[in-house]
Image (tube, rainbow, N blue to C red):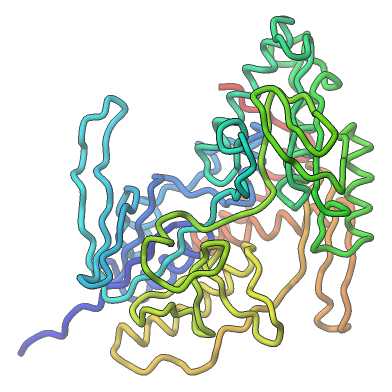
Length: 434
């Protein structure tokens, strides 16, 4: 008797949604059906990248090995950068894997699929601002966050020795974009600066790390209620962060950021002012929006019936509104949950469930350092928004991180360990120096 053909689902990208989808499908169907492809060997929750950049989170301690997760959860992991997708042949090509000397470890590979799920996330959008792509760092990958951390440490070492040429004895960091990433990075850098002198840099006192946050809109945290934005700004100003709103950046130079009639001296510039989908998406010949996100229908399917998309790279309709689903981790998590039964039905050759994807906005929380936070929660029982601040908001923010790690590890113990680490970080911030 001839066995049924194997329906192979390939998930391109191991971010929050892609990894959760691979874990849940892998547990149900096994590695012959489910493959995850990612260019990095380790997964780290993207909302934590500002902590990696500040050095208060070590990716080698908090990162999760894709290979380990694949072994434990029944999916196949392929390490490498996706260079192209052949929709006609239904296969994607993964670049050759090389060592530090450039020697080929694994050749270029072809990965066939019956169903492809695009979960490749997003990159920083410089909006064609002169000099931004050369002189600003966008925290969209762990590599970029690590690069910023190392550049910051070098600038601090020069300032401690008073050998820097821009502002002797100090370091200026300019953050462009007053959304959640920019606000959280500003707060995290303040936390890191408080402990710098303890690591052999006695000349680099916390007040010499000067942080400026620039926002083009009328206020920071534009999507959140005004009260939340005001509370966040007050906390940042209290910590010595200069907040400049209604100020559009026109140029980024090697040593400065130009915004209208202002010139802000900058040893380092971080760009957190917008996102766009990776260039791979635009090469697929699928229907796109102006942010280079691929358009999907209410079932997250693209214009190609064999390709679905989720997370930041997808422009999914937010049913009941005239908007698309926002690029947030909670959206990717909900989309992963939605796709599990749909893709399982496709694997079995059945008609997928008919109900559309409906995004539920549970609100937003912003971390303002290890002991503070602000945010708004949707009051599903009261029918109104609830505003939370202080340590409770910070705790609720951390819970979203723990719940993601618990989801992909499938262990309550992982949540307990993460809670223990987070509480210890809250009382004694760490800065990674090597």
